[in-house]
Every structure is written in structure tokens, then in C-alpha cells.
Image 1 (cartoon, each protein chain N blue to C red):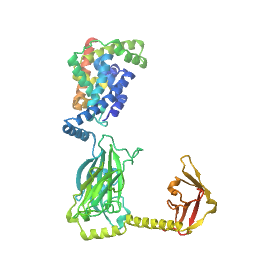
Image 2 (image 1 turned 180 degrees about the vertical axis):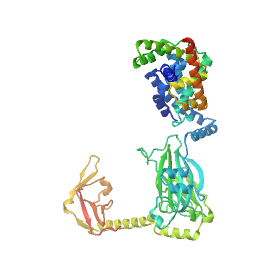
Image 3 (image 1 turned 30 degrees about the vertical axis):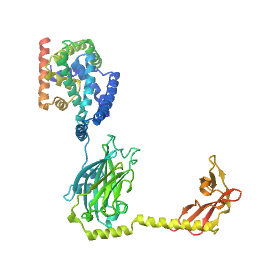
Image 4 (image 1 turned 90 degrees about the vertical axis):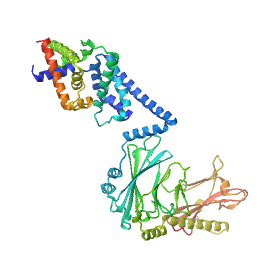
Length: 174
Length: 383
């Protein structure tokens, strides 16, 4: 893969990669850094990348490795509660597009916050597939590729993550 | 809560509309371009240093990883010749895979195959010589730039002569052009592949057969190769940038001396170059005869009266003669020596064809007045 192919990937998959980075980093400044570092790392690894072999999954896997390294080195601050900025866009979009009543929408916002909290508190091996699946819109196959694990394992981790969050929410709001 | 509801809730909660800012994307794109340039500079610097050999290995591996080299079979398939693709995989095919670096090019001879009816695209000469030889050659640039695609405007600017040559035979007489040759060409991933074909060369296996490649021309060039009349050997001229010579590893058991002699006898007898040189000689003789007649004051044809005109001059002092769409611009000293008068025979311009020719003659009188005229020649030249 050459530089022009990579530039094309910025335009083609930039949004998905960025959203994934945002969820991982938890704030815009760190998300920007992670997103940028992902593509710069891809320059070094471009000879391993093949445009026809799911470059999106490859880029996500780079982002995951960088995130883990950063977290180890810099001890990134783990955010317990999401910031307003973090969710404002998603919540406003959902409340206007859903057919729920204002009351439902308020409940929904609360629920979302709880879900986001619960996801954030998951251990990495459950949290990463969840973000890949729901935030970066990756298929099970792509997640397996990015994490280097079998598809069956991806499915079981997604299932376990869902169950864990459900339980956590049932405890918080019985 | 139902699973479907839960799934929808997760999707809504975890989806995001966050987007990278355009300025961030632009900054990344600029950085990508810049890093690419830094990489190139880095490689160049190292290549000049002591690590040249190591780097060469690394670069070779990188190139191997990045670029897929096609096999003769794949090249033939790519050019739509499945029959030939199969032939390159047959038992009789010879895999060579040798490369030579010369000038700005790397020439690789991949392989060859000989036989009758091997190609889906029949050559007109197969009715006379059914057996033909096919070889696959690739060319890459050493400066890292790709060879121009066939759709690029630069395609064809780098021309190449690729031909078998036979030891003991004058290469300007016996080469792909005289051996009923043809070629097909394609460019894949910056690599130019050419399949050449000609009358089969295994006949000459006992003498020695080369595959010659030279850049800069589509024809055999004495500047690129040296022929030793005594030993019959052909060598590349080292000073020529972009030439290579491969010894073809042919099976000497397939040589047929008698058949080869018969082939050469016929080829050299009807050689177009010889025919052409004979014609050239006849043409020169005819011109000399015309000049001699003019010098002797003899008539060489019918003057076209209305064509007789005094010449004009341009700013540089060249004479200008125009008549009926024909235009001649010439320095007067090219036509007449100082003090010379009468008709010029120094330069005789003849045009025409199909046995009808016209000569442009210039005449200078005692006063220095130069006139031009056209003469319809009485007897044409028969090509």
C-alpha cells in the first residue's frame, strides 16, 4: 500500500476510526492525538497493509495497540463519568430522531449515560469489541482480524459484554 | 428488557456522531506526504554510504514484498493468450529468471518456449515456418519510478529493441525484424512485460543464441552491441546505457544444422535490408546521372513554364522559392559556390512517387539573379 492509498483511507474510514478513538480516549484532545498517531503509524506499516484485505480493521488494530501503549506509559486518566461534550451530539441526535415522548427521551438519556459508564468500566477484552461493533460499525469478522482472535471468541466476548452491562444496569436501576 | 430492545439501546448509546475536524485530516494528509519524502531521502543517503550492500538487500526484500512479479504464464494470460500461458507451464518451457542492471533499467529474462501452434494469435508467417519461439522479458526502472502505463502519454517514449541474436550471424541482418518477429506488451504495477516471438531459434542451439535488449531504439543498434566478425561473438558495449545480453540455455540436442543453414540462406537472400540497400544504390545512381546531365547542359525533363520564378530572400539571407504549395528555403551558398553561375547541381531536390518525379532546379545568371523552376522528369525511378 502506498501513501496515496493511505490518504484515501483517511477519507474513506476516517470517521469510523475517529469515533472509535474518541470512545477509547474519552475526550477530544486525546482522541485527536490517537487518531493522528494511528495514521502516522500506518505509514511505517503500510507495506504490511493490503488495500483489499480490510485496511479498516488494520487501522483499528493500530489504534488499539497505540491506546494500550499510551495508557501504560502515560497512565491516561480513566473517566468514570462521561463529559457533556462526549455525549451531547449523540444524545441530541437520538432525541430528535426517535419517536419517544419527552419523558421517554429523558429516561433514555439517563439510560445511555448509564450504558456508557458501564461500557467504560468493562475490562479491555470486552470493551474493545463492543466499541468496534457499535461505534466503529465493524463486523465480527473485521473485529476478529483487528484483534487477531477467532470470530467465535469475538462473538462470545460481545455476548459476555452485553450480559455484564445488563447486569450492571439492573443493579443501578432495578 | 427484550434482547432486541437491549441491542437497539446499546447501538444508540454507543454510536457516535463525532467527526475528525477537516483541519485535522488535512494535517494528517500533509504529514503523510512529508513522511513519505523523508523516507525517500533516508534511503538515498544510506545507499551512498557503507551500508549500501545491506540496504540493497533490504530494498530488494521490500520490493519483493510490495510488488508482485508476474510469471511468463501470468503475463500471457494477462495479454489474453491462454494457449501460450499453458505452453509456458509445459515441460518444454525454459525458466531463466535472470536480471541485468544497465543504465536506468533492470532487464529480466523470465523464460521462453518454442514449438508449433503455441499461441492463440497466429502469425501470418506460421504457414511457412510453423515453429516459433516465444520469450517473456520484463523491464523496470532503477530510479524507483514506474514504467509508464500503456494509457500514459509517456508510454512508448522509452523504446526497446528485444531480439534473439545468433552467434556467427551479423546481428543487423539476423534479428527479430528479419526473423518474422512480433511482440505484445503490457505494463502491470510499474513493470513493463513484453512477449516477443519469432521463427524458432532452437535450430541454432549448437551455435549459441543470445537474447539482446537495448533501450533508446526499436531496432538493432551498433552503438549498443559489438559484433566480432572473426569469432562471431556478440557483446554489449559497456559504455552504452541500457543494454543487456543473455545466453539462451537451449537444448543443443534440438539443433538442426542443415535446417538452420537452409533457413539462413533464404532469410539472407530475401533480406529486406539488402533489398533496401540495392534500391538506395539505384536511387543514388539515378540522381548522379541527372546531375551529370544538368552539368552537361542536357535536358532532364519538361520545364513547367509557370513555375519559373525569381526567388525572394528572408531576413537571414536564405532564398525562398514557392510554387503551387511547394516551398524551398535554402542558404544560397548551399546552391552556388562563389562566382558560380548556371544551374545548381550541388543540391538537387526531387519529389514524387509512383514513377512520376519532379526536380526543383535553381539557376543563377551573370547578374546574380537566382530563379527557381520545376522540371517534370522524363524517366521515372522504378522502386
